[in-house]
Image: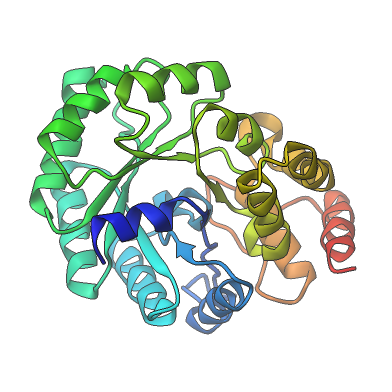
Length: 300
């Protein structure tokens, strides 16, 4: 894929697949393949293995490699793959090189979790990864409200393969300013807080959005994208209203159940187990019926 092709792939619903587990706690590769095929058959064309909805930080390095390989195998020629990498620089570079060897065309670089992140250090971190795999498109995942757009522009000048940005600071006005300071046309802007923020971020210049909900109902996410592409914000907000409660449950208590609610919905549909790894938790029994009802309602 060319960088221009990758830009097109990012201006879309960027799905973050879940990582299903067996009763023994291992990767459930059969269920994983089934869920990936369901996304692709549902019209999804961009997949992010090892994203936060995929429990990136709860997977071992070997498991992250396997998730990457499974996703690339199932995607084939039908979807672009944006592999999540992170942790320390050597670990991230090793994952980047593995993704390249496996056939992935681009990487999403998780926001550094180090407690002391400087703007200079942020640029150096991403530059080290981007320069290690210059053939791959690079997409920084920005969750830090302190980072300035000027520093992203600096990274883009140094690394032509930085093609897009997953912006996940919950402030639409800040996003609009950040994108313009960094270069609105230089990067593809992906609304990194999914469907709840997609309409407001599209108004500020985003052309794609991430989604965990898409695991449950691809048609809803694609319907919102279609409306946003057409400038039909009223239509997009009708979808927003349908998914509102589901996303409120995911966002409650500092997003404690962000992945849990998605897996619970999938379990209610018989698509995978609800098992999840610490520090997340399974949804309490008392809350499961509401999630199941929402998921069932989307099928009608």
